[in-house]
Length: 405
Ligand SMILES: *[C@@H]1O[C@H](CO)[C@@H](O)[C@H](O)[C@H]1NC(C)=O
Ligand SMILES: *[C@@H]1O[C@H](CO)[C@@H](O)[C@H](O)[C@H]1NC(C)=O
Ligand SMILES: *[C@@H]1O[C@H](CO)[C@@H](O)[C@H](O)[C@H]1NC(C)=O
Ligand SMILES: *[C@@H]1O[C@H](CO)[C@@H](O)[C@H](O)[C@H]1NC(C)=O
Ligand SMILES: *[C@@H]1O[C@H](CO)[C@@H](O)[C@H](O)[C@H]1NC(C)=O
Figure 1: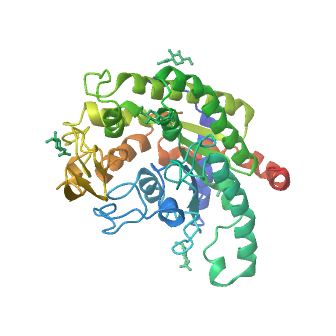
Figure 2 (figure 1 turned 45 degrees about the vertical axis):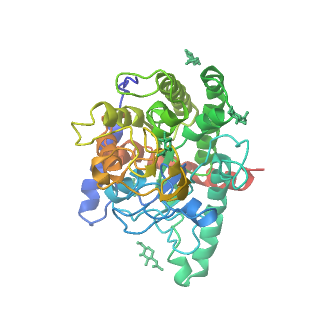
Figure 3 (figure 1 turned 90 degrees about the vertical axis):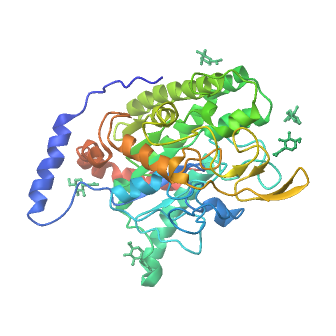
């Protein structure tokens, strides 16, 4: 498992921000706050992109919190919702959702079934999202210029767009990689073969972080990947695989751990290459694993059984959550369990809102971050470099134009 290396914190920078805060308090200006979030990822953080662009995510998704399906892969809120809420920002609109979007305080480029690397096959024929990470980044690049153009036009549409200054001050969040492992699984690769592809996958993630830095991003919050071997979906795929003390598939968890190890190394390298960036590595793996190993402590039961689904040991065997199907000649609907708040897995791949809330509570404390700063103090890490950032901003905007050519 990951050990948290206690990176040295730039305390002088922390002080600088506090001083600025005290000074500005006089004028009632809040300075140490992210004004926007731009999120990139897969179904762990999609807030409606896939639903808008590809296929409807049906009831009972959304039943617990929103009381309607919202395109989230859960019964309620996902971790990025809790992050936005805790920073005093609205829930993120999906970039591809043309009907409900308000991008004043950020946008969400994450898509269900998205990978880091170009997927081998895409929906609806294949199994993965066409909006893999490179595409999400290029969507973001166009987002910057188009939103600024629209703002200048004024009117109601301008009130839906972020201010230009938000791009340098925003928090850039990532939660992606799980589906790159799944690509190998669907290609019938062995664990060793998938393992061998990890360095290349991580390279793809690093490249995109650099691209977003070159587009002006400075504060990065990067989730590692969860325990792939603890997903009811994985355990259903491999019914006779070797399991650990908690019932998770050992070899697939080792894959996730190796992914995370390589990601952590890549972030150390990125910190050297991107001197004005503040990059936080967040060990979501350990928290998600503890939901299973310490299920009782958190008030959860059956942590490896999907709440919503139908069939098999993991309630994920025959019909997927929210779908109808015929099983043994009988028409059935794969609905939700009675009390999702007592369960970890919502649909065999994604967590319940109850689990997502605990994941958020744990990771926002800083106890699972490198450097170990709580989410609400994160900005202090960044703000010290502000002046340097401002100086470089002009050069950065020049790069906007040339970057993707
Ligand atoms: C950081 O500090 C500067 C002043 O140096 C301030 O303008 C800014 O709003 C602060 N916060 C952020 C998120 O940039
Ligand atoms: C978009 O959201 C912002 C901030 O929440 C709000 O001030 C603005 O009025 C909204 N725009 C519209 C058109 O509702
Ligand atoms: C993987 O194996 C399954 C079952 O043996 C087979 O149906 C499927 O076609 C194989 N997929 C690929 C991509 O080889
Ligand atoms: C995966 O690859 C790493 C090297 O990148 C190696 O240390 C590790 O043992 C491999 N794990 C598996 C399960 O093959
Ligand atoms: C379908 O019937 C078979 C044979 O009776 C049984 O073993 C299996 O569990 C049934 N499947 C489901 C999903 O109920």
